[in-house]
Image (cartoon, rainbow, N blue to C red; front, top):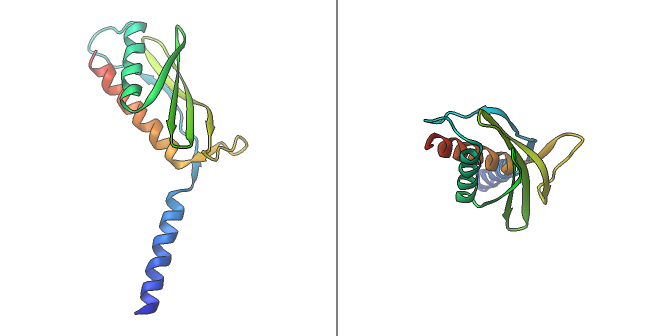
Length: 130
C-alpha cells in the first residue's frame, strides 16, 4: 500500500512538472478577418481592443496598422504585437518577464501559448460580431 501511494505521488508530481514546461512560442500569422460586413481599420482596432480587454490585456495603438497588447498576471508579463489590415491580422511575441523565454530556442512557458490562443479566439469572436 505504501509503495502504491508513493508511486501515485511520483506520477502526479511528474505530470505537474511536465504541465509547467516550456513550448515553442505560438504566433498567429495572417489570420483572415471574417466579418459580417466589410471591416474598416477602426472596426478591427475596436474588435481587438474589446477582445483583449475582456481577457485582461491592455491594448495600445502603436500605428495605424498595429496594436500592442500587454498581459500582466502576478509576476508574469507578456507583450505582443498585433498587426492588422482590413483583411487579416497577426499576433507575434515581442517580450516577456518571468516566462522563461529562450530566444535561441524560441521557447517560452507553456501558459503563454494558451493566453495567445485565447486572445486569438476572442478577436475572432469580436470580428464576427461586426
